[in-house]
Amino acid sequence: MVKILINIFKLFIFTILLSCTTVKPIIGPDGTENQLVSCVSVEQCYIKAREVCMGNYKIINTSTDTSGSDGNTSTSIDLLVKCDK
Image (tube, rainbow, N blue to C red; front, side, top):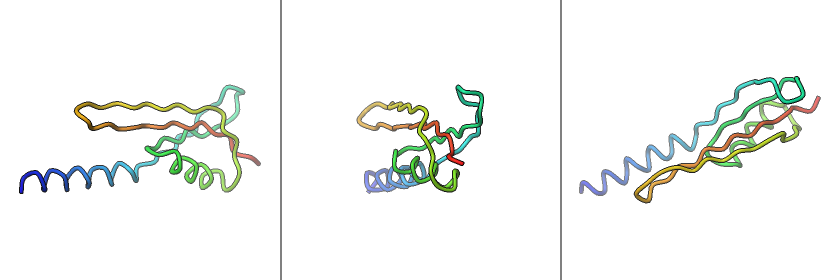
């Protein structure tokens, strides 16, 4: 019973983390405003970038960080985008 509860809790936490996507405006390498989109899946980053830019955007840079232990890993993706005007 305890194992079932632990697995349900892990699934709940994973679902919460999956829905976490943040956007932070930053100054890009060329001196113009860009958007730093952080998420846990690349599809979420693409969707959020399209939403923030109200359409098309260019990907300036990407980075991925995977961490964890004991068979539990988490991935963090950062997508730096410049909105098309």
